[in-house]
Length: 140
Image (cartoon, one colour):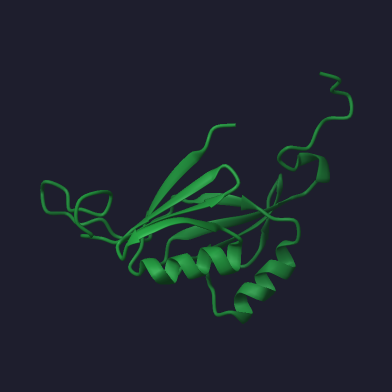
């Protein structure tokens, strides 16, 4: 499977590294400058850039607009025990945009990284719906 990269603009790269690595089991791949880091979680590569951080993803646009954290676009992490993870994250001071909600495919909640970027934590309703699970009828 190919690696998928997502870039998040963050106010504090070191705080973002700590959050993603300590709380959500990401691994630091590189952190060559205070304004840039690359993390991984399975096939997901998370690129962190500080706004106005020189050349690269955090630099201002030609009209002077500077990238900022936040918004509603997000990536989703599948978790095995959403309730336990939410309890742990709350105990560590994480901010949530909502309480756990149930949808047609599972339960989910939006947690914010230290800069306010959302991460959707998702627990599928049915164990066989988990990513990578094989259909017992599938013999291929």
